[in-house]
Image (cartoon, rainbow, N blue to C red; front, side, top):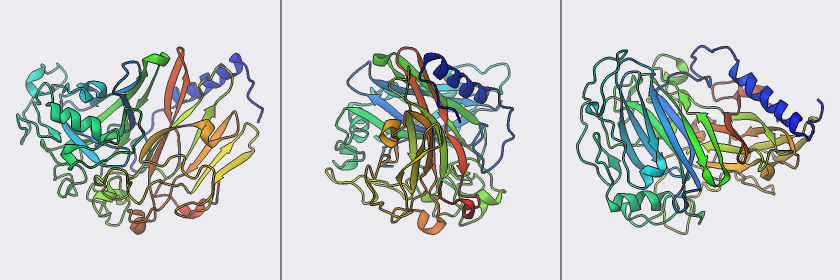
Length: 430
């Protein structure tokens, strides 16, 4: 392989080839156990940031689209970067319709209004219908549908504290996020198709019943995208929400003991019927020429078991999360192994934990001594007490964000190499 020229033209050509290869790929058929962009029963926004103090700081918004002509009810759950659910919101999405949620506005107390009477049905969709159990009021941790136009001051204080590592009164003055100390709310979002409005979280008992007959439905009808905007750097990056399909007939998602997406919350019973994400990933990174500040990786990791608020000043025992192996390759395939050895915790510095939380973005330079190349991730670790103790697998998701301040921004999923359903005996190192 030739070295990447450290010139504008060479870098731009690489970007065009990379992006072009993504956009001209032929459409794939929906398949359980594959990371394909199709309508799904669950969507994952793997990482969000909302700067609560600086209007020019990072902010995130996402759009949920209903691919069906019939209305759908989407249940969005916000989770902290330590995997604690903090807030749930029901979104009514008409047939062929879409709903946008601006998390900056949500953290300011502005609630999207999405009731069946909020807008008219389009010519290609069926008439709007009411879903059962949709209340008019909202609790401290839940917004009913139709929701109030604004949260209470107590609700706003809870959201802000819970996602910035501060004590929340709604959590008994305990903490639920890593203490980064910069005033930026962090976390991730799951969006499930549901049968009725609910204040439950996906981690609550009874939320999932096999066949989609619990609170959650198995209708594969949702897709969408999310956008990160940083006005101060004049850059924005958009990426598709991660599609997670449901099936109660495929053995990958229907047999007890299988590692499904929500296995950590259903005791690996496969009651959620959701396909798992991958365990091994590879992605391109570029940190030369006009790519400044360089590539960043968005890394989401499976909680492994239900997490609860904790005493401020401490952290749950499974943090910081380690990795089995991260290997950086340069343009001539020379490797640099950050960590190796599938043990927990991994004792080898530096650093032992470039991705210590359930969700984060990490600069490529933290993990690679090279200016550009490819990064290999084996995030299949087994912290004590996680679902890996019964399944032997820990799913994850990796995206790569390319940035050029004021000119260019893009975020693409990393290449999915292996997942829990694959033959892991075929994997030998990197």
